Length: 318
Image 1 (cartoon, rainbow, N blue to C red):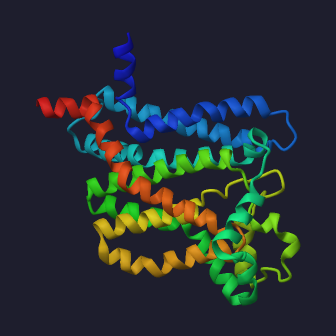
Image 2 (tube, one colour; image 1 turned 180 degrees about the horizontal axis):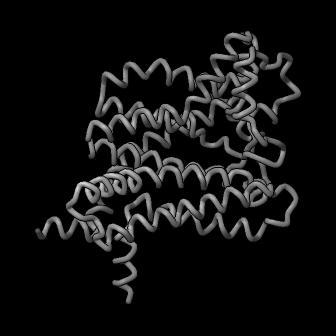
Image 3 (tube, helix red, strand yellow; image 1 turned 30 degrees about the vertical axis):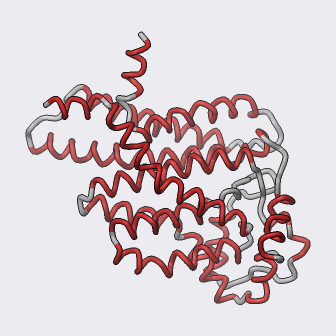
């Protein structure tokens, strides 16, 4: 019986297993805190969407197991579609978990650590970057910073889809699994070290508002949607910095030309996290360190997991 349970677990890919593991506490916290002040009703909608994604996700795995894919043209098209969905749905599920979890962090752990993060910045730099960058605020620069910050997901999709379309399967799997692993570790960090960021914790120190043109107005509305004192303890570690740094590392490993082309955009995004007052400097450093660790150990963990999977074992026997 024990062996059968482990066999089922290893039928899943690593990122699929992690999604299942993270789904359990998400469901638990939603049930426990649904009547608490600060719980957002919109979380229920997000959870339903997440559940539907997860069911579709399991359905894809089941369809593959039932060998419904035929050798006809329609069968080959179905196979390609299912393979693409199986590769990409774990990332969609990862984002779905985030949208459900981040609003509940303050309920799970109400002890914000902003004061400690501010102290660390003072120790490391001798000043607060968000306050220092206030001297450089202009409407045009604010527009550019918001554009850079909001391009986060676009950068992830462009690089991973480039690897997928060009059939660099090993590079694609290494990158995608490592990105998802970094996200999930970061989520745990949000719960252990909840913080609202300089935008709220240091609001009394700022003398200049982050005003821009209509570009800032449009983007900031989307980025700041539903933010309040009850939401988004998602500072430490900074996943904006960590994930983009991770993409840079994999780009230099697999596609150096892309890495050099992407580098200026990455630097702009790093600066934007401080300029827009979303993160402390120590958040950035923690994100870089996390990305570096996952860059080295993520592929190793994924390779170990793949060797345990029945599909891999059958291929070796064949």
